[in-house]
Image: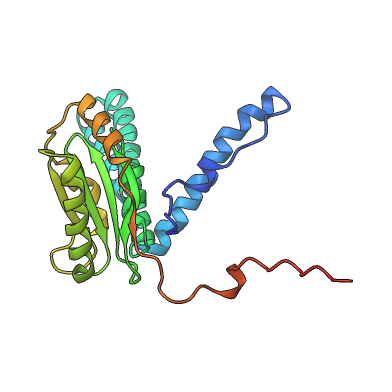
Length: 249
């Protein structure tokens, strides 16, 4: 089995016990958000040490500029509050972009990273991870959406070419007339960097109606997996033990 990394943070997935009092319940959400922000900030700092100074500096620069404008135009009561909001918004947007970039960098090169990104996307996307693969850890994922069928490959281009061609031929037999798009994720020539995968998928034209997408998913569920089993003899630990012979008196 191929382990698919998840993009969800631990703070968002962990279940918290119900609060004993209303005061404790009011204090837990801010604390949880602060812990999550600190955790993400630590990830960003490890990925790019210059990112956090840029985020803070950009926010402060917007505030300072609008404060000066408010003082010069004698509209400080209106412009300064707007400047503070604009500064915090600028810092939040940059912080989110650096966080997303750090997450992509953390999972880049791991098997199943492309499937994890598509599963976290918004929209009507149905992801079937690892529908085909080989012993060299070249993996093909199947994604169904309004654009049709998208085959996303992770691994070496030479190994993925044959895997994706075989999977495309198999799908075309039961999905006649449906667009089948091939994408290879990686850093080699002709491949899409993992950080650009979501943008590429969102820009695909919508060719199918929602009803056609549901019908296509139902037909594709019957397709068997093309993963190759490892060659060689079965290990002895996997064999069933022989029952003891009855003693003859």
